[in-house]
Length: 235
Image (cartoon, rainbow, N blue to C red):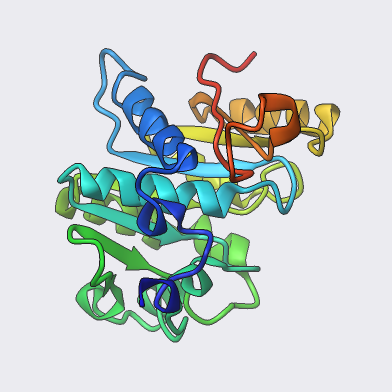
């Protein structure tokens, strides 16, 4: 059964007709039109704080883009608390750390998803003692540039930006950043701090995704807590 091969977080695979899945498709569409002058081929998904839904958003968005026919690479750049391998029920035995530190060949660190053609995964690998140093290294920037040439779209799941510098660093390597905000949970001041941190390093904020909206306040229409989005300029 499919439910035994992927996590329940991957609603885009488990229930293609769910309102949550439709919301991720809408987010995919909005990204297509997020920049008029420059093609968006690489984005970072981050949040102000932990447990706001960024990893779930990144994974489901990647699935929806792959289903559209794009060759997509989903990257887990959270070198402190990686989650994506758990969503796809795969081992996190190699990935970014091994590619950069041990110089493992790129093709050996990528994994495919049997259920979703065109979707590839690059996990964090073994958690290193110096995540920020790895992510800010010249090798990491070169890795992203190399991957841009091989894939139609890179979606990078990064750590919360208000607490760590990692997401802000990676945000300068890509075409834009999407900030995930949890309704009723995200501290407003922390969200502002997150946006400011990104802007201070010159990262382009494409917009924000609103998660965990109480379905009791939405007429009972949605069955999943990750579904709604808001796209627009971040002040």
